[in-house]
Amino acid sequence: MGEMTVLADVADMRRRLGNDDELIAELFQLFLEDYPSQLDTLRAAVDSRGPDAVRRAAHVVKSSAGNLSASRVADAAAALEDAAERNGVPAFDELFAELANQLQALAAELHARRSAQ
Amino acid sequence: MMRVLVADDDRLSAAALQRTLPADTFAVTVVNNGAAALKVLTEPDSPSLAILDWMMPELDGPEVCRRVRAEAPRPDRYLILLTSRDAREDIVVGLDAGADDYLVKPFHRGELLARVSVGMRMLELQKGLADRVDELQKALAQVKQLRGLLPICSYCKAIRSDGDYWQQVEGYIAQHSEAQFTHGICPPCYEQMSKELAEYAKTHRSPV
Image (cartoon, rainbow over all chains, first blue to last red; front, top):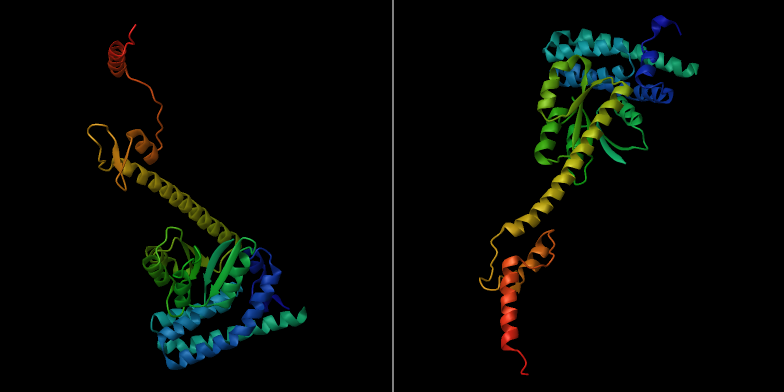
């Protein structure tokens, strides 16, 4: 896997989690299980234009991505969360599209990592 | 075994927290919303230590802190809030709401364990203090019985205890305090008693 595609910073995770590779594998697994429904919740919130629902949904994604040290996903989620806090409804679609892309890229990376093992 | 509540709607955070707390020391209960956290923390025998995410469905972390402090106040309670790295300005709000400490997400294992052990130290201190206060209150209750109004006989100095039983003063005090008595005779009484004994001997002298 090329370094430029690395979205989850495993070195940072190992540093934070005391080199617990079993836990890291478990977190990857939980993310792969949870991200489709997180994405659905997020899409529904964006479609409903409800700032509070968007803020909450984006916050959970930011938290999950943070646990995977996936800063690009976490940043995209934080941007959407910030927009929702400032009631920036017009920016929702663009920020959601960016976050959805990053999430899917992260999922693809984690799938690839799993099949490589 | 120390019981800990972890409340977080992000399964990854909850799993990482649960896994980081050693299973031989901590019995961890996990819930995924604020209302469930409040329910667990207001039950009898609830965990003393809780790690609560800031933003959760139903009730947020600070609101859980406020309600736990109001509805189930206990001296042995330590609440840690989890906050995102970009929400540090909220920390004052969280501490004001009744949190004892906070931890920034995504957490670092060493920091989590250090903060949890500070919590355990505080809980032990609180327990020590509570035990001491308890002992002192028990001792104070004893002292109070001696400070109350004691009905005493003006002539023989017996004290009326509960149940209309008249008791010698030394027996009464020994029963109601840690004091003990050794018996002797004071100089004025000695003089008085010597006189009386001499008088008695004179009047009861056997006829020769």
